[in-house]
Image (cartoon, rainbow, N blue to C red; front, top):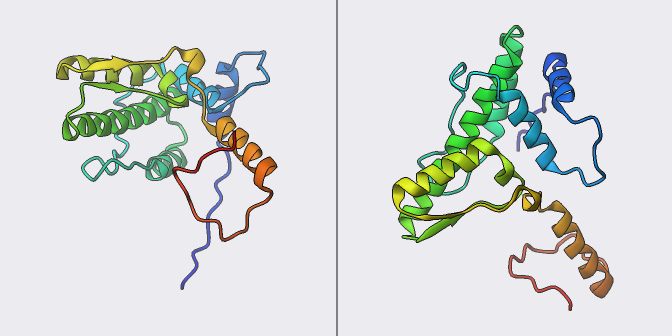
Length: 187
């Protein structure tokens, strides 16, 4: 097996500074991925979502999605065009991510002939995604459930809590533990 060496890209100062400036001064103790999503949304608000044509990967294949190619495209674009407006980069990135998620949801709804769709997790707090999903659902004649932003948090804390309870009841697991999607939690 040939091992590829991973490249480590340094953080870009202008984007990092813009993200920091857009963040609220007081950060609560329950910071989640939602905070990162909000920063992108705030910066993107004043950008042009069509300024950069970032890729929309895996749109026509299955329902899985990955944003690693999109993130790589952003890094490469910023390295190639360091003068690119941070707002345009953020808006174009957000537009590409929203397109992929909305298209996958639309295809899944059609294939499984559902009556309604829903968003969940940290990404469900993103305003452009919420608007796009609600509009697409309305045009398709589907119901649409969007949780209040207070409930749009990353699932990592819930997974960690479930892991803690499993550890307390069963002890540590071996490194050969398989993935068990329907694993029951101790009561």
